[in-house]
Amino acid sequence: MTTRPCCGQFSVGSDFVEGLHKLDQVLFFVRGCLQSHLVQVSSILNDVSELLLLHFIIFRSGFVKF
Image 1: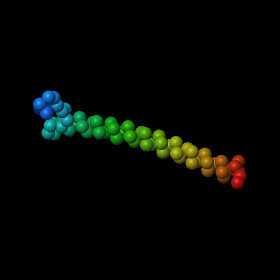
Image 2: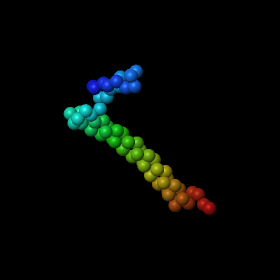
Image 3: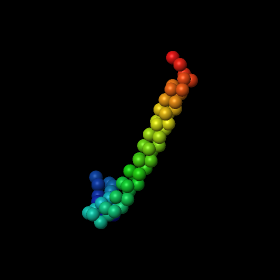
Image 4: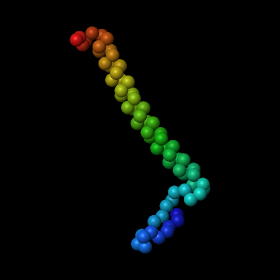
C-alpha cells in the first residue's frame, strides 16, 4: 500500500490497482459483485413470473368474474 500526505493532516493510502499486478484481485471482486446481482435479479424475475402465472390461472379458470 502506498501512502501520501493529504492536506497536511492525514495520510491516505490505497490498496487499489497500482499498475496491473493486482488486477486479478479486482476481477475476483467484480465477478463476485456481478454474481450477487445476478442472483438477486433472477429471484425478482422468478417472483414476478410466479405472480403473473397465478393471475393468468385465476382469471382463465373463471374463479374471478367481472
